[in-house]
Length: 469
Image (cartoon, rainbow, N blue to C red; front, side, top):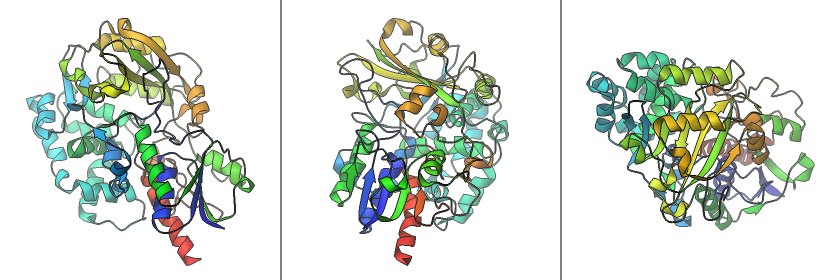
């Protein structure tokens, strides 16, 4: 009998398997697709030689993850590449605010009226970032805080809505960039703890940047898989699990799946009936014959570029997708251009590029024209650079990855108390009604992103049970 079986080979499932195998437990991992990866994959979606990341492409949370930093992933081929700027947010007048590794450069891009306010916001936390990240991403109660005072100070700043936090800024440039940071998790700007979301992304950039993985995000998953195999773990692909009886006998079962799928497979009935899924996204992967022709010079050297005219436009786009049940007229876009740091992604002189906007969960329309109109506002002539495009709305995203229910790439709404207390109100979010069954997906704290911490935290709950029994 195995000690543990893990279902789902996304970053969290792989991390959970690695953490258990590192502690001497026998582990087997089962994945429905032909390759491991989940939200960290790389595929040729458009033309031969163009290597696209179907989901996550820039990795501020991965390089800052306490779980990943404790693993020898570089030994297994993972190499982080840094663009000159982690992120830029261009404006219609051809200027841009930036999120730089340097606090000073970032503050200066907001203008003199807000430079000091931004420094006062982030500088108290930066010297203690590693401890803060570990404490924040280990909540709730999977580990005692190493620095409870700093964590409490962070909570006082971050738990109110982001709209409260941005009141300290006098001009729109800083408010807009910060609103874009919050929108990365598709959370309404006025929601609970959204200030913490924006602050985490900003601190992550100042601490270690927003890099891309050389060769594509698949490198993250492949490194985890190679390390797991070296530890003696087994990986079975092309193996779809429809019920627990499909799996070999084990002392524990760990699911990197949506709560909906886990309830179906394990026979939990309506246990997760109140779990909410959030807006979907409409994503386009592009093969380009050259770099994106951004008007703002800063955007040309940034790995990630946020596209939204101001905080009001960003808020309206989020509101349309999450509350009004319609696609926004002017979608807020998150875009990534890996080629500014990694020329291996495309043939010489060519580039890969992706952009997505928010749409209602399960939306079946086509947002291509609206996305490209937005891009043309900030990069005139963009359409002339397009060699090929691959579009994916909520149905296509859900078909590629079953965790993206209705196109929700966060595997659950990141709003209200569900931002922190997911998938249910519980001090033990990784356990389930069955004592031998656990959940480790992005539906558990600390939530979405390629960081492996949900898997790391769930593995702690598993090995404590295994040692007791």
